[in-house]
Amino acid sequence: MRVQISYSIPKEFATQKGLTYETRYLYTGFSRYDTERKTISRITEENGGVLLFHEAPYSETVFPRVYHAEHVRVTIFSESPKVWKEELSSDMIYFFREIQDQQAAT
Image 1 (cartoon, rainbow, N blue to C red):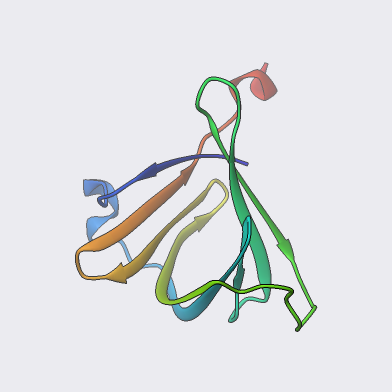
Image 2 (tube, helix red, strand yellow):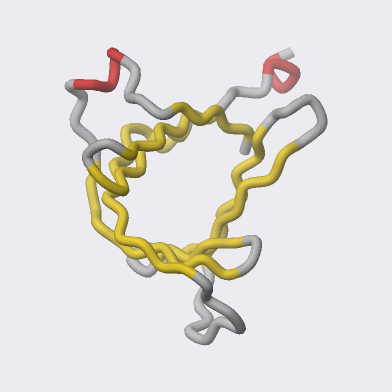
């Protein structure tokens, strides 16, 4: 999915409740593993600076190389379009919003 990332929460989501869970991200080369949801994800860049977020279930429990782990609080505001935030600390927040494909609507 195409996503937009910002470092603050937009006003329309500031007071909105969502599903919140705490997890640990394990960083493995080009991907990261969510220990709570058992998914692996990665972000790549398409031509023109568009960010693509890839996420898939991952049932393996052995990783060839984990170079970093961090505790994260994730809040999911919407599943479709997907909107969520990741809080690493009170002053480090990443807000993700799925960008709808305009060509798919035509």
